[in-house]
Length: 246
Ligand SMILES: [Mg+2]
Ligand SMILES: [Zn+2]
Image (cartoon, rainbow, N blue to C red; front, side, top):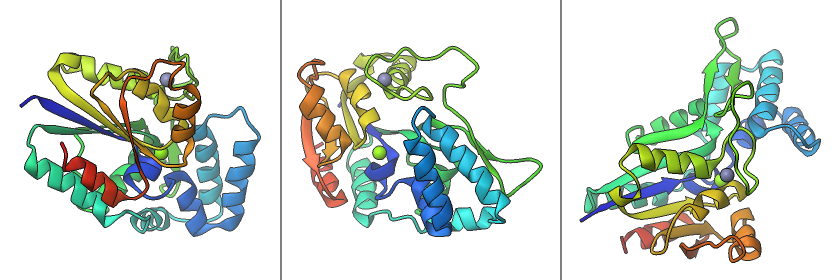
């Protein structure tokens, strides 16, 4: 049996929340509003905006432990855990990849909390680390740094990461597309559209209903030549059902 690559977006796909927003929602209404205001101001890249607001959070006296505790109570559906562990047990040829616009600290904290640290063979996301002169300040960077060569995505990925290019690079480092019998991608967001365009007939896109990815597929899928088989889901138990067909 050939290998199956299962790719998870993280926010609203693997977990039932947006990690960036959640930390502020738990800790400070004022900073949650500030994040919103900065985002709707436009041109800034998401991790830059979150990074700026993390600076404000530390300045207001919130601690590293408070940030980590907020992440540990972020909603994660037990059926998602059952789905991924069950599939891995039934099919040892499954490889899990996380492709996310969140950051290293958020994702690793949440995975650790749920005993899933070793689930993903790789986590491709924005870099993050606690500041060396203020240990309560989380510094969040861009996956594609602003001061180097930029990606050349044509379908509208944010400057900090093109998930399509990341997926292609991951696959080519592992022997190319022929190393995998099937790719399954679980996503919800507008930036999950690009990697789906790099997949082929027989691959699956498990698309969360009524979210931005769902809308992009409806509006642009045919025009952009989307080839994958699209399957819809709302809750994690449905992912468990789909996984049972793999
Ligand atoms: Mg998402
Ligand atoms: Zn892209």
